[in-house]
Amino acid sequence: MLRVVVVGGGVIGASTAYHLARAGAAVTLLERGDLASGASGSCDKAVILQSKSPGIHLELALKSADLFGGLTADLGTDIEYACKGGMIVVEHHDQLPVMDDFVARQRAAGLDVHLIDGQEARKVQPILAKHVVAATWCRLDAEVNPMLLTHAFARRARGLGACVMTGTEVTGLLTLGGRVAGAMTPRGTVTADAVVLAAGAWTPFLAAHLGLVVPIEPRRGQILVSEPVEPAVQGDMLCATYIAAKYSLGLSASHDAPSVGLSLGQTRNGNLLLGGCREFAGYDRRTTHKALTAIARHACRIVPAIKGVQFIRSFAGLRPFTPDGLPILGPAPGIPGLFIASGHEGDGIALSPITGLLMAELLTEREPRVSLDGLGLDRFMTSAEVRDAEGDPAETISRENAASGVHSSSRREDGA
Ligand SMILES: Cc1cc2nc3c(=O)[nH]c(=O)nc-3n(C[C@H](O)[C@H](O)[C@H](O)COP(=O)(O)OP(=O)(O)OC[C@H]3O[C@@H](n4cnc5c(N)ncnc54)[C@H](O)[C@@H]3O)c2cc1C
Image (cartoon, rainbow, N blue to C red; front, side, top):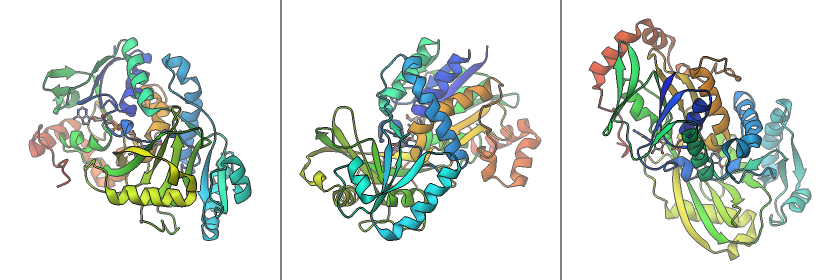
């Protein structure tokens, strides 16, 4: 039986563990804190299709959306999945051409999304301000409770025979005969035929144990949470500047702060979740007065009724950012037995079902239903680096171990 260690108990690691266990593998999931103690427990709940860029990104999101429909039954838990549609609000006429183009490209890629005028947008979301000139609308956008989802994946994996160990930090990777053969922890070494790095923004530290450079950086987001209020928001709402901040499109980012754009949703319990900002602040997970004020100001302009709502707490999370906005999925070049499933930036909740399924297909040597070409780590390496790495795996591992020290890491979590 294939033995796999999955490192990281966020939504990606938990989904990978579940799909591997379902495929018959003997899985051990290792999480240094609690399940969902990283980005997967400090995020919004959007399963938004229309925010994905046309191409492989959107293709993954569409396939993932198909899987979400059956997950409640498969996992045997209410994960608060609901398909209520979603909109991207356009505040200014000068934002229209860019959003028009974004929508046209998504429609060409097969997504049912369209632009509606301000009046129609206010019919869908009566809370919108009068100055909003238009919005995009996609009836397939959905939402899910990310904490329930992560825990449900892990619980079901355990039900299928997986061993889920929380409070268990991976401190090194075991290599034997030129292959990765397990993970070291303070509680002992877990041997395996393969190790999947699913540690989100922390994957680079794990990869560095074998001298492998993974270009993932933490991109902080902050969220304000309101007291429960009557149902006020239909599905999820973003604004055009949110899309601009995510993809660096040619729109003026915001009138308040460069990286702030609206993200607004409401939990089943009634709490409003107000985001969102994007900042590179190292591994600092604190909220800041500056960002929260900018988020609140920006939101109040688009949804004035928010001014009368009491906000009760705030939190920050670290999105695992990659330079091209796509996750890194696949084998680590030149390191047999090592796989990477990380770097989902602001899309990890939405892409978790398809990511877990693809990793399980890859590891159990079935043809992945979505081609992983273009998603591997090799896209960030020069062809000489790939040739070097793939030349002699055994030599590479021992050379890199010698160079870096198995237990050392070239990056520090304090951002230094
Ligand atoms: C403010 C904000 C809003 C967001 N909104 C959305 C949204 O609406 N929809 C959406 O799809 N996505 C959203 N995202 C993105 C989403 O949260 C992430 O893409 C996703 O959670 C990443 O999951 P992950 O499992 O890769 O990483 P994480 O959830 O960060 O999990 C990584 C885990 O690895 C563990 N770990 C690290 N090092 C080790 C080690 N050495 N040993 C053992 N364990 C280790 C960590 O403790 C952590 O639990 C948002 C993110 C933020 C910050």
